[in-house]
Amino acid sequence: MPAETRTRCDRNEFVEANMGLVYTCARRLQGRGVEFEDLVQAGCVGLIKASDAFDTSRGLAFSTYAVPVILGEIKRLFREGGAVKVGRTIKDRARELLRKKELLAEELGREPGIAELAAAAGLDVSEAAMLLSSAMPVISLTMSEEHPGSELDLPVDSPAQAISDRIALREVLEDLDLNDRRLIEYRYYGSMTQTQVADRLGMTQVQVSRREKAILQRLRGYLLQ
Image (cartoon, rainbow, N blue to C red; front, side, top):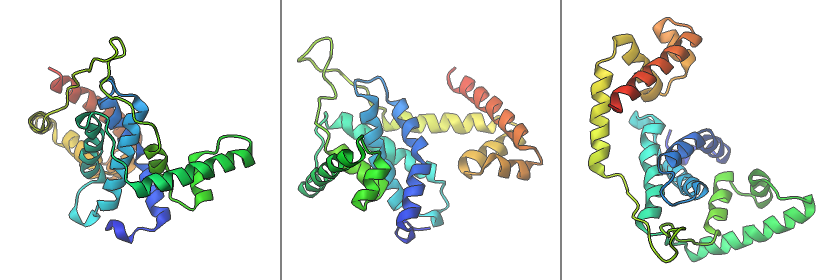
C-alpha cells in the first residue's frame, strides 16, 4: 500500500521489522574508516525514506526497493567527507529531545531506551532515532588514525560494478535447477516466508531452510570465482 496510507504504528513496526536490511548494508561498507554505528545511523535514514516512499502496488519486494536507498544514504557519508548537513528545524527538535532525554533519565534513574524516549516525546521510534543521530558531533570520516592530519582514500562501489554484479547473479540463477531457482525467486524476489515457499513447492519448512542454505552457498561459490 502507498506509504501515506500507513498509520504511525504500522510505520514503526514496518521500519523495525526491516532493520536487518540496514545492518546488512552497513556490514558491506564496514572497515573503510567509518564507525559501524555511524553507518547504521545513516542506513536508518535511508530505511525511513524507503519506507515512506515505498508503494506495494508497483509489484516490487520492499528489500529490492530499499537496499539501493539505504546504501545511497550510507555512501553519502563518504562522498560528502563527513559534512552532514542538518537543517535548523531538525537541530531545534533534536536539542528539545535531548533535554527530554535528560529529564527522563533523572526520573527513571537510568538512560531511557529509544522506545521509552519516543513514547515520552510523542514521536515515532524511527523519528526519535533520526533526531538523536542528527545531534551527534560531526567527525572526519576519512581521517587516518595512524597518521593524524592525513586522509584515507575510501573506495566507493561504482554503478558499473553494481550492474555487473546483477548480471552475474542472473547468470548463475539460470544455471540452477527449476525448483532451486523457484525457491530463490519466491524467497528473495517474492518476499515469501519459508513456510509459504514450502507450500508452493510441496516441501516442509525444514527442507526449504536446508535447501536454501545449500543454494546460497553454491551461489557464493560461483560469484567469488
